[in-house]
Length: 315
Ligand code: ADP
Ligand code: MG
Image 1 (cartoon, helix red, strand yellow):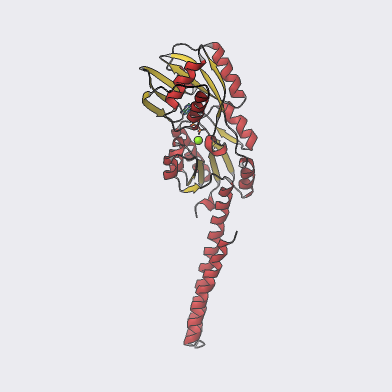
Image 2 (cartoon, protein in one colour):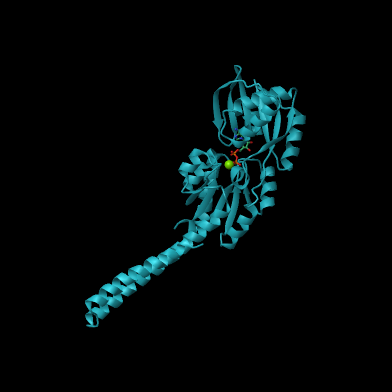
């Protein structure tokens, strides 16, 4: 019932509007590419994040010798940290890494900005307080995303926005490709929650579609939380009210239409059933009703109500 009344929808970017299967496309090391990948992959092999999986795959392709990471801690929306061979290692967003490193080479900063303008996500790697380099990751947009947005607008959804922990440049480049007007970037999980609250003040009923641990607070706050079923993390699936079983965004439009149709049919049935009872009562008190006719009328109206309900099965 709630999903049919939604007026605004917020989509997470990575894993929801995009496939969530990012690939490492470029690597730039300050000194040693093999060391950079080795440290990054050691941490990321413990990560649930799609970026983590991409980095591990890339490292394996380069003949990565697996080294163990201990005390690994995922920082949703920021990155991941831990100890590799007894030294502190951190992988993630620029701001998160730069706070933990002494050096910050100019060439790396420049290259990072360039990749971001191209719509790539840049992951920084620091080890033992030194920046080792950056890794550019690119994700493909879901082929159905743009079409789904058009259909949702046609259904009368007033506001559709993208929420992401990724940087503004990358986010805008992808939003433009899909046809989404509003972009909220560089959001930590609690900031995603705040955007949902803000949208609720403006539009009352707001849906959030997401897949990650970082989306869980927003999914819980939204009027309707919707999780991607295949790619979605366990927390997202448990928090959401609706799960899209095959990650198909076009099912969202179906769910909204189904909800609205169900609502209409329920109302029709209530009006019909009550009117019929009123007619039977009047006929009874005016002496125009026999017992068999009364039973037939009453049970008959029930069958009609059921048949009307069954119309929902088609489509
Ligand atoms: P989104 O909101 O688009 O799903 P996230 O909030 O999960 O993205 O992540 C935001 C950013 O934080 C990523 O773009 C990446 O730069 C960084 N990040 C988060 N987790 C990791 C990780 N395990 N490894 C590397 N970078 C990460
Ligand atoms: Mg995500």
